[in-house]
Image (cartoon, rainbow, N blue to C red):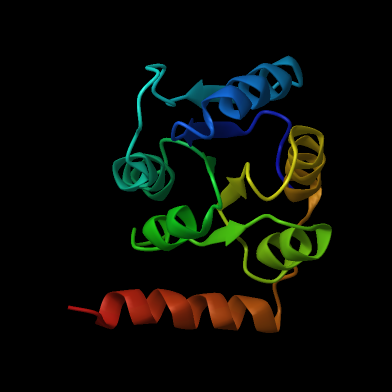
Length: 153
């Protein structure tokens, strides 16, 4: 389970700026330390650099968790998972959140604003933060994934 004082870094492309701001306000009010890295300009924003920024901050320990918000979330989850040490999960349902945190120990949550509405997103973030990693055989699989990252050239 995540501490009420988790350090969370949030970003979003042009589809996610508004939700990033709302999540920042809600999570900060609940005691989390939140850094909102979403660009505030009105133009189109490419998501890969945003995903890399969040991923590196989580992987190097600057933040405990990351939340990335895009349109579908599909590209974002792919980009986030290119960063060594990141296990990003796409949050489109309670089941997906339960598996990404409980089984896969996801350290980055990806939300698609074209897939779920704002209230569902807030509910899924709460569920994601409250879901503990199960460990046991799942920890073995996480170690295998980390080994895959070490093996790639």
